Image 1 (cartoon, helix red, strand yellow):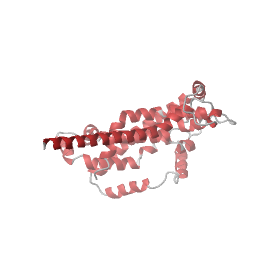
Image 2 (cartoon, one colour; image 1 turned 180 degrees about the horizontal axis):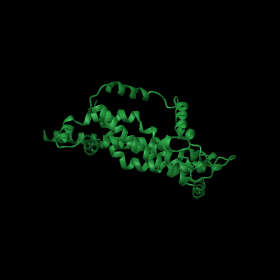
Image 3 (cartoon, helix red, strand yellow; image 1 turned 135 degrees about the vertical axis):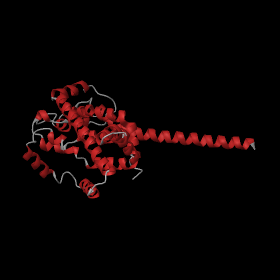
Image 4 (cartoon, helix red, strand yellow; image 1 turned 90 degrees about the horizontal axis):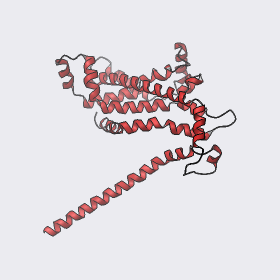
Length: 285
Protein backbone atom coordinates (compact mmCIF):
# COMPACT_ATOMS: atom_id res chain seq x y z
CA UNK A 1 0.00 0.00 0.00
CA UNK A 2 2.82 2.37 0.89
CA UNK A 3 4.47 1.73 -2.46
CA UNK A 4 1.27 2.49 -4.32
CA UNK A 5 0.87 5.78 -2.44
CA UNK A 6 4.45 6.81 -3.23
CA UNK A 7 3.94 5.94 -6.89
CA UNK A 8 0.73 7.98 -6.95
CA UNK A 9 2.49 10.96 -5.36
CA UNK A 10 5.36 10.71 -7.84
CA UNK A 11 2.87 10.58 -10.70
CA UNK A 12 1.02 13.65 -9.43
CA UNK A 13 4.30 15.49 -8.82
CA UNK A 14 5.51 14.66 -12.32
CA UNK A 15 2.23 15.84 -13.83
CA UNK A 16 2.49 19.07 -11.82
CA UNK A 17 6.02 19.72 -13.05
CA UNK A 18 5.02 18.93 -16.62
CA UNK A 19 2.09 21.35 -16.43
CA UNK A 20 4.33 24.02 -14.92
CA UNK A 21 6.93 23.60 -17.66
CA UNK A 22 4.24 23.72 -20.35
CA UNK A 23 2.71 26.86 -18.85
CA UNK A 24 6.13 28.52 -18.58
CA UNK A 25 6.88 27.66 -22.20
CA UNK A 26 3.57 29.13 -23.38
CA UNK A 27 4.17 32.32 -21.39
CA UNK A 28 7.66 32.65 -22.85
CA UNK A 29 6.27 32.30 -26.37
CA UNK A 30 3.60 34.91 -25.67
CA UNK A 31 6.23 37.24 -24.17
CA UNK A 32 8.44 36.88 -27.25
CA UNK A 33 5.50 37.62 -29.55
CA UNK A 34 4.62 40.79 -27.65
CA UNK A 35 8.26 41.88 -27.24
CA UNK A 36 9.18 41.35 -30.90
CA UNK A 37 7.57 44.59 -32.24
CA UNK A 38 9.51 46.64 -29.68
CA UNK A 39 12.70 44.84 -30.61
CA UNK A 40 12.08 45.50 -34.29
CA UNK A 41 11.41 49.18 -33.57
CA UNK A 42 14.77 49.53 -31.83
CA UNK A 43 16.57 47.67 -34.63
CA UNK A 44 14.92 49.77 -37.34
CA UNK A 45 15.92 52.93 -35.49
CA UNK A 46 19.59 52.07 -36.10
CA UNK A 47 19.27 51.84 -39.90
CA UNK A 48 18.98 54.42 -42.65
CA UNK A 49 15.59 55.17 -44.16
CA UNK A 50 16.44 53.63 -47.54
CA UNK A 51 17.59 50.43 -45.77
CA UNK A 52 14.16 49.96 -44.21
CA UNK A 53 12.70 49.09 -47.62
CA UNK A 54 15.21 46.31 -48.31
CA UNK A 55 13.82 43.79 -45.83
CA UNK A 56 13.44 42.91 -42.17
CA UNK A 57 16.51 43.81 -40.10
CA UNK A 58 16.99 41.67 -37.01
CA UNK A 59 20.45 43.04 -36.20
CA UNK A 60 21.40 46.64 -35.33
CA UNK A 61 22.73 48.93 -38.01
CA UNK A 62 25.27 51.74 -37.99
CA UNK A 63 23.00 54.78 -38.25
CA UNK A 64 21.71 54.91 -34.69
CA UNK A 65 23.71 57.96 -33.63
CA UNK A 66 22.87 59.76 -36.88
CA UNK A 67 19.14 59.14 -36.38
CA UNK A 68 19.40 60.30 -32.78
CA UNK A 69 21.11 63.47 -33.98
CA UNK A 70 18.27 64.10 -36.44
CA UNK A 71 15.75 63.72 -33.63
CA UNK A 72 17.62 66.11 -31.32
CA UNK A 73 18.08 68.72 -34.06
CA UNK A 74 14.32 68.65 -34.66
CA UNK A 75 13.73 70.00 -31.12
CA UNK A 76 12.82 66.63 -29.70
CA UNK A 77 13.74 67.53 -26.12
CA UNK A 78 11.27 70.43 -26.09
CA UNK A 79 8.47 68.25 -27.47
CA UNK A 80 9.39 65.52 -25.00
CA UNK A 81 9.10 67.98 -22.12
CA UNK A 82 5.77 69.27 -23.46
CA UNK A 83 4.29 65.77 -23.54
CA UNK A 84 5.74 64.91 -20.14
CA UNK A 85 4.37 67.86 -18.21
CA UNK A 86 0.99 67.71 -20.00
CA UNK A 87 0.66 63.99 -19.23
CA UNK A 88 1.66 64.49 -15.57
CA UNK A 89 -0.90 67.28 -15.07
CA UNK A 90 -3.62 65.35 -16.88
CA UNK A 91 -2.91 62.31 -14.71
CA UNK A 92 -3.01 64.29 -11.47
CA UNK A 93 -6.23 66.18 -12.29
CA UNK A 94 -7.97 63.14 -13.78
CA UNK A 95 -7.23 60.92 -10.79
CA UNK A 96 -8.24 63.58 -8.25
CA UNK A 97 -11.51 64.49 -9.97
CA UNK A 98 -12.42 60.89 -10.79
CA UNK A 99 -11.66 59.75 -7.25
CA UNK A 100 -13.74 62.52 -5.66
CA UNK A 101 -16.69 62.06 -8.03
CA UNK A 102 -16.62 58.26 -7.90
CA UNK A 103 -16.38 58.27 -4.11
CA UNK A 104 -19.31 60.67 -3.83
CA UNK A 105 -21.46 58.58 -6.18
CA UNK A 106 -20.60 55.40 -4.30
CA UNK A 107 -20.94 56.48 -0.66
CA UNK A 108 -23.21 59.55 -0.50
CA UNK A 109 -26.95 59.59 -1.01
CA UNK A 110 -28.31 62.68 -2.75
CA UNK A 111 -31.10 63.50 -5.12
CA UNK A 112 -30.35 62.67 -8.75
CA UNK A 113 -27.36 60.48 -7.96
CA UNK A 114 -28.38 57.59 -10.20
CA UNK A 115 -29.46 59.89 -13.02
CA UNK A 116 -26.11 61.67 -12.85
CA UNK A 117 -24.27 58.36 -13.01
CA UNK A 118 -26.36 57.22 -15.99
CA UNK A 119 -25.51 60.48 -17.76
CA UNK A 120 -21.81 59.86 -17.15
CA UNK A 121 -22.15 56.35 -18.56
CA UNK A 122 -23.91 57.68 -21.66
CA UNK A 123 -21.01 60.06 -22.36
CA UNK A 124 -18.71 57.03 -22.53
CA UNK A 125 -20.67 55.75 -25.52
CA UNK A 126 -20.13 58.88 -27.60
CA UNK A 127 -16.90 58.89 -29.67
CA UNK A 128 -14.88 62.07 -29.04
CA UNK A 129 -14.56 62.65 -32.79
CA UNK A 130 -18.28 63.45 -32.98
CA UNK A 131 -17.93 66.48 -30.72
CA UNK A 132 -14.61 67.64 -32.13
CA UNK A 133 -16.04 70.66 -33.98
CA UNK A 134 -17.99 71.79 -30.94
CA UNK A 135 -14.95 71.23 -28.72
CA UNK A 136 -12.72 73.37 -30.94
CA UNK A 137 -15.38 76.11 -31.09
CA UNK A 138 -15.67 76.11 -27.31
CA UNK A 139 -11.91 76.27 -26.85
CA UNK A 140 -11.73 79.17 -29.32
CA UNK A 141 -14.41 81.13 -27.47
CA UNK A 142 -12.56 80.56 -24.21
CA UNK A 143 -9.29 81.74 -25.75
CA UNK A 144 -7.52 78.44 -25.12
CA UNK A 145 -6.58 77.58 -28.69
CA UNK A 146 -2.86 77.67 -29.30
CA UNK A 147 -2.07 76.55 -25.74
CA UNK A 148 -1.85 73.35 -23.71
CA UNK A 149 -4.96 74.12 -21.67
CA UNK A 150 -7.31 72.13 -23.98
CA UNK A 151 -5.04 69.14 -23.43
CA UNK A 152 -4.95 69.47 -19.62
CA UNK A 153 -8.29 70.74 -18.31
CA UNK A 154 -10.99 68.80 -20.28
CA UNK A 155 -9.42 65.34 -19.69
CA UNK A 156 -9.88 65.91 -15.95
CA UNK A 157 -13.57 65.07 -16.55
CA UNK A 158 -12.83 61.42 -17.21
CA UNK A 159 -16.07 59.43 -17.49
CA UNK A 160 -14.31 56.08 -17.36
CA UNK A 161 -12.30 57.25 -14.36
CA UNK A 162 -15.48 58.17 -12.49
CA UNK A 163 -17.04 54.80 -13.30
CA UNK A 164 -13.86 52.97 -12.32
CA UNK A 165 -13.45 54.70 -8.96
CA UNK A 166 -17.15 54.39 -8.15
CA UNK A 167 -17.09 50.64 -8.68
CA UNK A 168 -13.95 50.26 -6.60
CA UNK A 169 -15.25 52.47 -3.77
CA UNK A 170 -18.55 50.56 -3.63
CA UNK A 171 -16.74 47.26 -3.35
CA UNK A 172 -13.78 47.95 -1.08
CA UNK A 173 -14.64 50.92 1.14
CA UNK A 174 -16.97 49.95 4.02
CA UNK A 175 -19.28 52.55 5.50
CA UNK A 176 -17.92 51.68 8.96
CA UNK A 177 -14.54 53.17 8.03
CA UNK A 178 -16.15 56.49 7.17
CA UNK A 179 -18.25 56.49 10.34
CA UNK A 180 -15.22 55.67 12.50
CA UNK A 181 -13.29 58.55 10.95
CA UNK A 182 -16.15 60.97 11.65
CA UNK A 183 -16.39 59.77 15.25
CA UNK A 184 -12.67 60.41 15.66
CA UNK A 185 -13.19 63.99 14.50
CA UNK A 186 -12.08 63.79 10.87
CA UNK A 187 -13.84 66.11 8.45
CA UNK A 188 -14.95 65.00 5.02
CA UNK A 189 -11.80 66.27 3.31
CA UNK A 190 -9.54 64.67 5.91
CA UNK A 191 -11.38 61.37 5.54
CA UNK A 192 -11.07 61.55 1.78
CA UNK A 193 -7.37 62.39 1.57
CA UNK A 194 -6.07 60.47 4.59
CA UNK A 195 -8.22 57.34 4.54
CA UNK A 196 -10.15 56.85 1.30
CA UNK A 197 -7.37 57.55 -1.20
CA UNK A 198 -4.81 55.27 0.54
CA UNK A 199 -7.42 52.49 0.67
CA UNK A 200 -7.97 52.85 -3.09
CA UNK A 201 -4.25 52.75 -3.94
CA UNK A 202 -4.45 49.93 -6.55
CA UNK A 203 -7.37 51.61 -8.35
CA UNK A 204 -5.70 55.03 -8.18
CA UNK A 205 -2.43 53.74 -9.63
CA UNK A 206 -4.29 51.83 -12.34
CA UNK A 207 -6.23 54.92 -13.35
CA UNK A 208 -3.05 57.03 -13.22
CA UNK A 209 -1.29 54.65 -15.62
CA UNK A 210 -4.21 54.62 -18.04
CA UNK A 211 -4.55 58.42 -17.93
CA UNK A 212 -0.83 58.98 -18.47
CA UNK A 213 -0.69 56.59 -21.42
CA UNK A 214 -3.80 58.11 -23.01
CA UNK A 215 -2.40 61.64 -22.70
CA UNK A 216 1.08 60.64 -23.87
CA UNK A 217 -0.32 58.94 -27.00
CA UNK A 218 -2.97 61.56 -27.78
CA UNK A 219 -2.71 62.77 -31.38
CA UNK A 220 -6.03 64.08 -32.69
CA UNK A 221 -6.78 66.77 -30.10
CA UNK A 222 -3.25 68.24 -30.04
CA UNK A 223 -3.23 68.24 -33.84
CA UNK A 224 -6.39 70.36 -33.91
CA UNK A 225 -5.87 72.79 -31.03
CA UNK A 226 -2.09 73.45 -31.20
CA UNK A 227 -0.90 75.77 -33.94
CA UNK A 228 2.55 76.67 -32.61
CA UNK A 229 5.48 74.37 -33.25
CA UNK A 230 7.12 75.06 -29.89
CA UNK A 231 3.99 73.66 -28.19
CA UNK A 232 3.94 70.38 -30.12
CA UNK A 233 3.64 67.17 -28.17
CA UNK A 234 5.41 63.92 -29.01
CA UNK A 235 2.92 62.36 -31.48
CA UNK A 236 2.69 65.53 -33.58
CA UNK A 237 6.43 66.16 -33.43
CA UNK A 238 7.25 62.62 -34.56
CA UNK A 239 5.06 62.95 -37.65
CA UNK A 240 6.83 66.20 -38.57
CA UNK A 241 10.41 64.87 -38.47
CA UNK A 242 11.93 65.18 -41.92
CA UNK A 243 11.55 67.78 -44.66
CA UNK A 244 8.90 68.88 -47.11
CA UNK A 245 10.22 66.52 -49.80
CA UNK A 246 11.68 63.69 -47.75
CA UNK A 247 10.14 61.73 -44.87
CA UNK A 248 12.83 60.64 -42.42
CA UNK A 249 11.20 57.38 -41.32
CA UNK A 250 14.29 56.11 -39.54
CA UNK A 251 14.40 59.29 -37.45
CA UNK A 252 10.71 58.95 -36.67
CA UNK A 253 11.22 55.37 -35.54
CA UNK A 254 14.10 56.51 -33.33
CA UNK A 255 11.80 59.13 -31.79
CA UNK A 256 9.15 56.45 -31.25
CA UNK A 257 11.69 54.21 -29.54
CA UNK A 258 12.75 57.02 -27.20
CA UNK A 259 9.14 58.01 -26.65
CA UNK A 260 8.22 54.57 -25.32
CA UNK A 261 10.71 54.85 -22.43
CA UNK A 262 8.34 56.66 -19.99
CA UNK A 263 5.57 54.16 -20.73
CA UNK A 264 7.87 51.21 -20.04
CA UNK A 265 9.10 52.80 -16.80
CA UNK A 266 5.58 53.50 -15.57
CA UNK A 267 4.38 49.98 -16.31
CA UNK A 268 7.49 48.50 -14.69
CA UNK A 269 6.99 50.51 -11.51
CA UNK A 270 3.22 50.14 -11.28
CA UNK A 271 2.57 46.74 -12.85
CA UNK A 272 1.81 45.09 -9.50
CA UNK A 273 -0.83 47.65 -8.59
CA UNK A 274 -2.07 47.80 -12.18
CA UNK A 275 -2.83 44.08 -12.26
CA UNK A 276 -4.36 44.03 -8.78
CA UNK A 277 -6.44 47.11 -9.55
CA UNK A 278 -7.83 45.57 -12.72
CA UNK A 279 -8.64 42.27 -11.01
CA UNK A 280 -10.11 43.72 -7.83
CA UNK A 281 -12.13 46.39 -9.60
CA UNK A 282 -13.77 43.88 -11.92
CA UNK A 283 -14.98 41.12 -9.60
CA UNK A 284 -17.43 42.94 -7.34
CA UNK A 285 -20.29 45.37 -7.80
